[in-house]
Length: 400
Image (cartoon, rainbow, N blue to C red):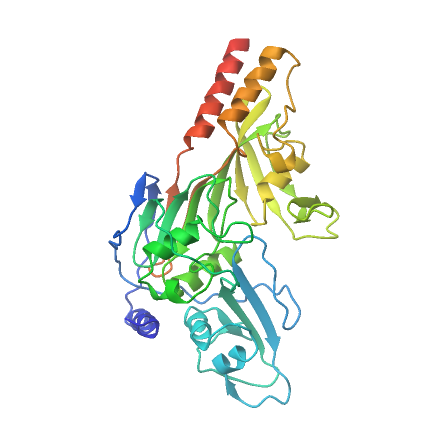
């Protein structure tokens, strides 16, 4: 079935009244490995979500919003007073580089093109002074994506999407310095028969990402319709994401909110920094609470309200509580505790057991792009974090 047919089927089902109140589904992560030949799909009744309403008005005409961590582009155009009536897909394809009319039509079918704050179809004819907004997932890049047969831990999969539990050390998508061995290379191999993965784009189906040395859950779309629907949820911040982290010290208060613009570090562009006066960077909000104090470190839970690059890591470091063994933000040094040789050796042993920042994307929740059902997934802490947490528990118990 073509994408046009698929979209048409969804529209027919919506008109026939097949939409029902969605149920919620919670899935606990398990170690199911995606291997060559895996492709069994779970199907469900198709339905479409209600219209999106106005998209955030955050940029001037024709500008692109730079969303640091969510992988989509948002454009806004005001039609010239002398513009003749023209199909909107033709109008936009002539203005957005490297974007086909097919992708624009898919965005319209998913409700991601608004004219004067109302969703329109691909055949809508633009009029002078129309205000057009379009949300497109996955901006194209110039690096070639090579299929590779790599193991992946699959938490859930159906005909529209896949949820994976990414291991620490795996880069999500190719970039300069990491051209292979990424999650996208693996998915390109396993889904090479799907049209979305035959477009030549660098990040097919991707709507969010986590850092190389962060473990945990990611959702990836398997078709253009699902891609657009999921991208809109991340854009509008209706997804749910909880992270578990081990940080130095004890945050005070034990539960709170960190608000501070996050942008590229002025001296080192590879890392981020907080601009509390808002002079640079992007608005960022992280909610945290202490799960368990462990002497000189604390196990905490973080909830993202925004999704900036390194957001949890840079926010916690800014507050004086860098993540345990986060080399880029100072957590790889012994920041709290005593000078006793035994303690120093204990911490060094912990750093060796967990040779990366102690951060895990533990839960992920979103609305299914076709059924509207709320899906929630949970991934247990990986072995390296569990072992270090147990060592700190033992250290605290030994002091009592």
